[in-house]
Length: 337
Image (cartoon, rainbow, N blue to C red; front, side, top):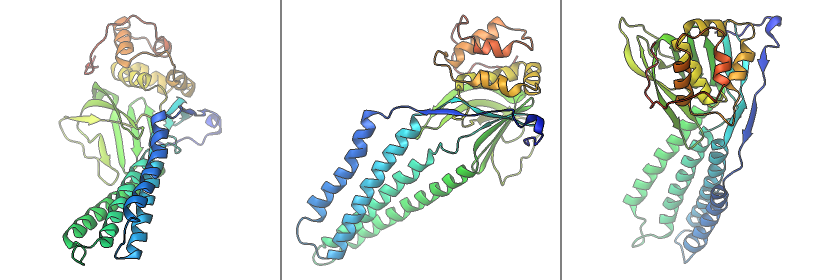
């Protein structure tokens, strides 16, 4: 789906409004605590007594201190990304519908790199420490070999997540919405689904780095989650799959899921919405975060119960009406008409 370069639609976009909630007290405690613990370990263990190698002692001290600093920075990044929230999503006009732009400032994978780097430095610090305290005049070869292997593995995982973060920066997860379905490019993966293939909503997945994924059950004859290098091959029959897009950029996640469920149930409304010249404004009004919004299943249940035959003019106002009568449904409601 390509963005139109037409001047008539150059102004059809909405700027993002984000906020980082105040960091928790526990986060500040650990931010301060990790360097102190590392410094205490260096003072009481690395520098206590006579070592067999002053170079190894110095190296162990530096690695231990660096590990504590990395752990502290990781705590800061992790908590900051966890408190990241989009109040108003950035939405632009496209030829086929709208695109919800992801925020490149949202960087959850940085903490994944830092925590593995901290463990790597700690492991090699312990290796250097073993050289300072030899057994019978000879460093313990087997423990050192084991810890070196662990350190190499941890460093490899840190490099993997650094590369994954680099790719995520290039493709942070913009979401294309059209009358046919949804498409998201997230790092090296492509997630796409047509509305008619959606089946049941299975809830949300919240990761400690701050990422939020919506999980949908899909029956489709094509892969809904694939690598960019893989070719999408259609099969003659559909198979059950999980569709889990990253939703941190959409603003009100509950209302976004209502849009998906409504597009599945009411394809005429979806076509009307995504072909409307004012579709950017309509989407922004729906997805702007409302502090009084209710749970997704509450609102979805009320909408589908109150409006079984949905008119094209329904959706925006009823999605914004958070005072509808509700009777809760459990996750797993089938949205097939």
